[in-house]
Length: 325
Ligand SMILES: NC(=O)c1ccc[n+]([C@@H]2O[C@H](COP(=O)([O-])OP(=O)(O)OC[C@H]3O[C@@H](n4cnc5c(N)ncnc54)[C@H](O)[C@@H]3O)[C@@H](O)[C@H]2O)c1
Ligand SMILES: O=P(O)(O)OC[C@H](O)CO
Image (cartoon, rainbow, N blue to C red; front, top):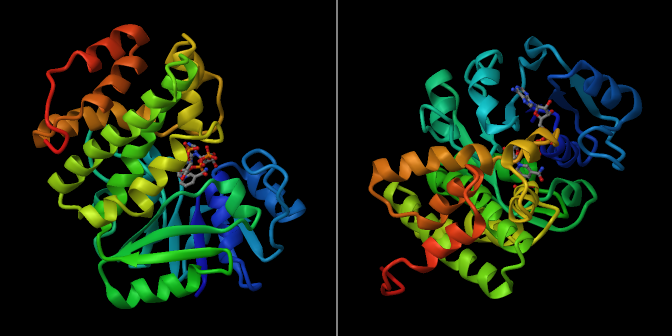
């Protein structure tokens, strides 16, 4: 399989490294020609994945037309850019493996829905799970969910993407895999706030558990399956991202919890913190689906500048209820 990777940030670069395992040729599209130049000349991406020497079989391009004639395209731009970038790509029925985690603002579409609308002939797969890019690129053991409705393609992609340190688990539940990855970013911001405001580890565990209940309610309402939401792409990624400052979303939350504004924190970073963009869209999508998501709503209020004490007070003052309700 000739693999293409669309997006040369941390995760696209790490996935190119996985795909190049065994010496096979991989082509990666970088929006910024300087990033492509560094990958081709120095076998490195110091802006987005510093400290990693890349396989020399990774070829970088910055012209979308150069992404034609490949057997599969991994889509790894920030979620809000997936539609615009895919519209420029010569997809022509090539399978698209969506690796971005988020919900599109405005349309409230999942990435699969965005891709299908643009390229109805292209089979869709989703790769998601607990995967810090720098650990994957360093060859540390990692497991992911690979979701695809077509059994033959699911098997072919799983075999092609698997490496001794990188283990995909297959499912046909594309929607469930997408929803876990999108919502965990929002919840990670909340957990970061708990850390930044010094609210304690009990509060963080409560937020993870109640946040997982929200993820499950929303996922089931949108047609995902409970087993997927409890798997690597849902609970697995939630646990990772809610417990480490290596997460951009968690770090953003730490800053909010320390009293800085979302605007200032987002202006300070080059890399994407998807939860900040997904949170307001998720709030609308949850209202539309009639799903109660108080923790995600609290994260929206914090991003909008509400005081931590007020937001936590509101959450704790909600009417008492049964745990499974
Ligand atoms: N970094 C990780 O550990 C990781 C792991 C799994 C999934 N993801 C997901 O992968 C996606 C990409 O994350 P990342 O970590 O690679 O991001 P990043 O912040 O490291 O890099 C973003 C890349 O996208 C490019 N970009 C930014 N805006 C763009 C636009 N409007 N159009 C085209 N390109 C644009 C940037 O130039 C850069 O190459 C996100 O949805 C993220 O949630 C990241
Ligand atoms: O750094 P974050 O918060 O974007 O998380 C990266 C990955 O999604 C972890 O699986």
